[in-house]
Amino acid sequence: MKASKFSAAQKAFIIKQGEEGTPVSEICRKAGISQATYFNWKKKYAGLLAAT
Image 1 (cartoon, rainbow, N blue to C red):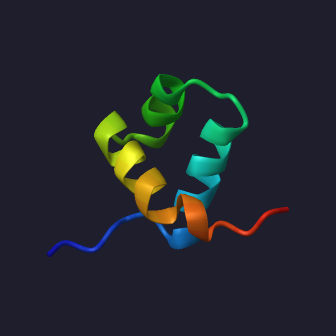
Image 2: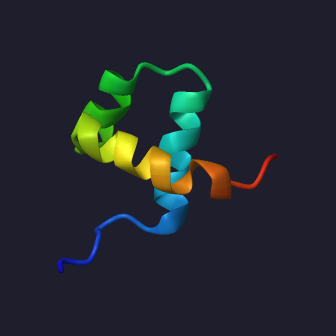
């Protein structure tokens, strides 16, 4: 299995942008990921993010 080119902190930052109201399509375009990848990350990591 190929290792991700994104660290956990980068994934958390990308997910946080979506929670702050940035459109998912814009986030994915800037990060160079698919919307499916974004939603998989959100499902996996959303509950693990530290509330700041």
